[in-house]
Length: 142
Image 1 (cartoon, rainbow, N blue to C red):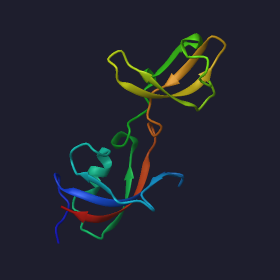
Image 2 (image 1 turned 30 degrees about the vertical axis):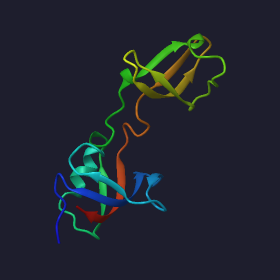
Image 3 (image 1 turned 30 degrees about the horizontal axis):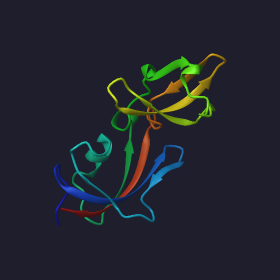
Image 4 (image 1 turned 135 degrees about the horizontal axis):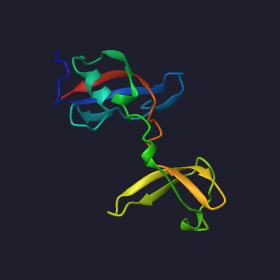
């Protein structure tokens, strides 16, 4: 039986949760997630945690934020003039919007503060700064 190594294409079932047990994603009811190990298609901690596993094996991966989505980057928060956002877009805390960078890249942001003249947007990934737990089952290795 072969063990997972970098460069292998794997299929896994998974449930991702925070350390408090709240689930943020799962493959339950869906096809297994397929990706190539070691190519950056998934977070570093997932790549590293799969190496050496065999088909059918189940494992719990405790992944610190540095090996997941990184720490919160204060520079990824930006206050912009409120009138810089079209009037038809609701400005409520927690609303997700899309901005376009000067080079044309689409960037998801979350409204984190609404003041009289400004709106503060956060471009950090919603899991940045969080340690993660993944329950995984290796379905196949190619």
